[in-house]
Length: 158
Image (cartoon, rainbow, N blue to C red; front, side):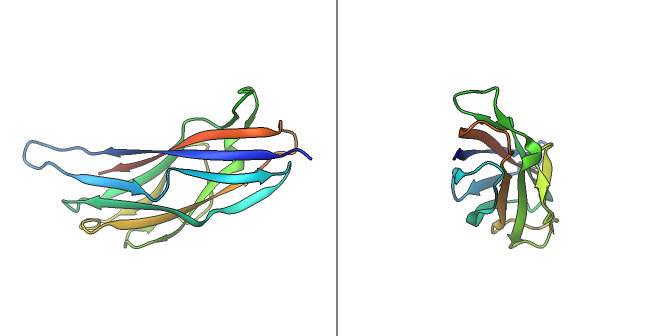
């Protein structure tokens, strides 16, 4: 029986624009910096990873509108044989909750492009807005057994 092990590592980026009159300060934090799908069989589908979700907390001192975005730097690539990979169409994310009053993208999306997770309205985030995201992986029938990794980038833009 072939087994697939998948490890995800997170990078956080905060981007803001300011003029000479108003300098914005904002933060982005996650409750973990990696997730592990564990051992998977060929053709297996595993959802709701991690079981309690990845919690992302964003704060903004000025309360300007902001967006939270997600992307990956590459497909899930075999650690020892980089010619083997799991396509971005098989790796998905979905938001499950937020403490904010903005627009939450709750539909399941793949990693074929950068996407907006959450859009915050004016005045939100001064006390911290939490967004919870989960992941799903569909292991192809024909992929080399082994360990696969990628890096996910979560960006907050004000």
